[in-house]
Length: 228
Image (cartoon, rainbow, N blue to C red; front, side, top):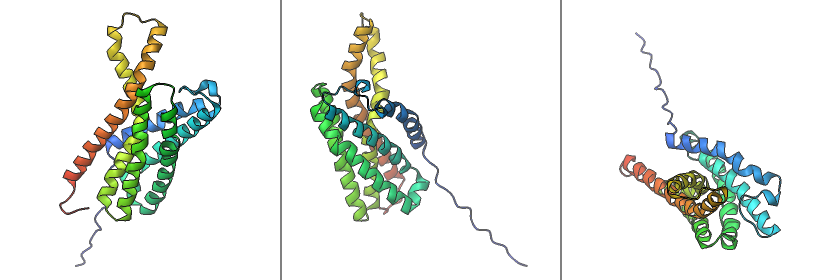
């Protein structure tokens, strides 16, 4: 009697629903965010700019941040992370794009914004935090501390996504305020939008980092003892 043994089926890790949702939002919204800047028409900028150089830096920031957001979400997909060579190459691309988007252009844009201090620091904090988190993640993987690397890169991507979260939060903030506004003329609504966006920027990265910490703690609880 011959016994035939079957190889156990390979269990492929499923992509978390949160990652799927992030990917869908990123893919759908990125063209909308990038489109006004593809024509290099300064008058179509959605963010106030003061000079031609200011606009050029903004265009570089928008394009690199958008691509970083798309590349970064791929790193959250378990099947891609399992392919180490692909994961490593995408990670390098993500880091280069992110450094340009946040350190090289995001910080100057925050410091030079004509929109006031709430906007300035609401953008400056994540622009400064991005290279710090990315750097700590890079050091961790160089030291082969895989768990620490994963956690710092989750935080890094949370900061990468904050502009998208801002655009989701601002309409909610507006909806909360509108019932209490007596003047709903177009001019008053426009003024309300402009005054709300800076607070949406703060809320964007705070919410993203809070979600990142929640995910990190869930991963820690699910990890087997002694892993890392």
